[in-house]
Length: 504
Image (tube, rainbow, N blue to C red):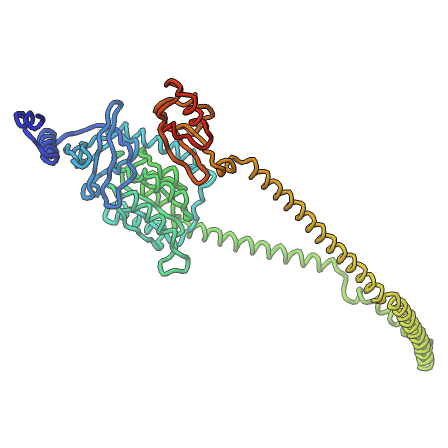
């Protein structure tokens, strides 16, 4: 009957692939080019294939979105979680999951207000982390020897910077070429800052003393690459002082807050980085002249002081008059007192005293040695190994006795525990229901596993489980409390232990 009714139906029969293809063509024909405004949700960056998958949502609906790899490289803005955008593309379906999605060809922020809100939120978060604190900013070197510039190599910015440095103080300038606008601008500038910091002092490329990150003016969208969070973190972590010269004086980006110094223009950044050589030369000449004049005046003052001191000092004859007279008087006295015999007598007396003191010291030394040797012998006599050996033997005997007692105690304890275990096992075997089952009895249980003790608890047709000594068997009750009681003799036979045949 069902085959006949189906053959009489006029409905067209489709395969799953046919209906999915028809829906796909219908959606793509009706929505071949649409602009959708919504908030980016679920963005986790490009897939390993280069494609990006996320969703656009508002307060009532959600639309899956995909950006192919070729389109991703052309986007002016990188998608970010929570960013409100206007997506241009076409709707299509994905038959594999029976859902629809928008294939995005272009992506732009939903107005400058959305960009400013995103920028303010990012600024607030980085400021809360302390990346903009004034205490972590470094001072610029007064006279750098190498300056690193991160900017476009083809714009007027690099020419203005090099021209200003050449006018003020010619020195070595390293240019790291980057794109300053577009999708990859933030990533390239971040790599340039990290690359300059990775240079070593003794490498083939000199290590810069200061960095200038520069770009001309533009709209908020044009400068968006310098609001990249990774770039702000790289500038804040840079070991080289960084001068930010992005946009005009009224423009601001996150790099302006993270840098150690902000310049209103790229030319102003060059003026901050180097002093004026002519001014330094003039200052140096002025200081040299002042130093020379001060040294000349100081020498003249010293010369005058020496002359004044020389006039106040007495002459050599006056200084030596008194010592000379004392020397003459001492010479006359020594002529009367000091004779060779007197000197010989005094030397002999000193020699005698020295010999006597030496003999006393030698006798005292030997006396001390004898006394110390006697003390050592007395101490050595007291320190005999025999008492130590006797004490060691006593302790060893005591330890052997304790070990023997311990072994006996452990053996007795094990015997008592073994006997107690044997008695408990014997009691368990005596009280266990398995011993009863072994004598020919059976244990009757219902379907839930509860033990049935009375025949009155068995209903006709109830499922039973009979447990014997060597296993269990299932059974169905053919009689029970619901049926009239059988004659006395069969009933007695039914309740006979070990024989429940009447229940089947």
